Amino acid sequence: MTNLTSAERSAQLRTNLEAVEARIAAACAAAGRRRDEVTLVVVTKTYPASDTRLLAGLGVTDVAENRDQDAAPKAEECRDLPLSWHFVGQLQTNKVRSVLRYADRVHSVDRSRLVDALSAEVVKSGRADLGCLIQVGLESETPEGAHRGGAAPSEVEALAEAVAAAPGLRLDGLMAVAPLVGPFAGDARRAFGRLAEIASRVRETHPAATMVSAGMSGDLEEAIAAGATHVRIGTAVLGARPTLR
Ligand SMILES: *Cc1c(COP(=O)(O)O)cnc(C)c1O
Image (cartoon, rainbow, N blue to C red; front, side, top):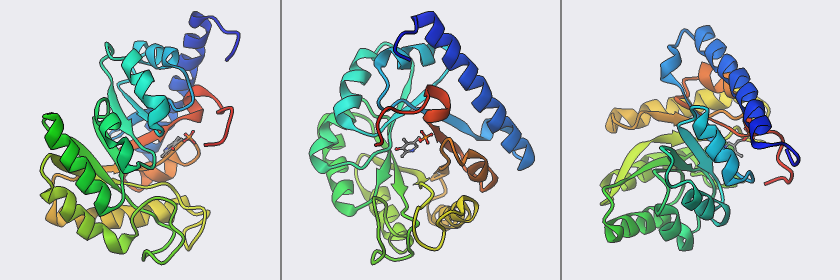
């Protein structure tokens, strides 16, 4: 990407977006789902604000970031664009205030301390509300397993209740990443199937929590087959990231 002009980079992003769009459309068709049931969220982490701007020009409506240090200045530079911002990374409570300045939704709510911090800060800021997704760690059913971000399935119901009861927070749904360890390692389809079961149980008590955020560049088909409503795509749109994050 280094030596491309803006027009060349835009053409490259357009080609990549078309390829991702074709994959999403095919996955929806294969699953018997309507295309408009799935929203593409482009994960712009590590890429410059100029790319975010080009993506908005190409019709992208939703972008995601995972580190506040990078996201905050980028969102500021892109404040004039009609974009919805999703925060998808592990969130420390001392970053909550900053994230709330630009994030429309946080996908990575995974503990009650974070629920409390988000709620307090939303109330203080005076903004209407914040959409929250509970991140489910599918490494194991209970918190005793190796969890790298995400509440265990056994903790989801209580956390959903906490979000729903917290002033300023709105429970929008669940998020997960296909796990690298545990019973679902290497089997994204079954992992996302388990996520769908948990999501459907949450909707019994919280019918408005309809978002299921699952699927990345390598497994969007499995996620859509399992009922994902939001896919989070980085590499397939922007290219391989220079460093692992
Ligand atoms: C980086 C990231 C993605 C996008 O991953 P790709 O494989 O680049 O598509 C999706 N979700 C989360 C939480 C991420 O951190």
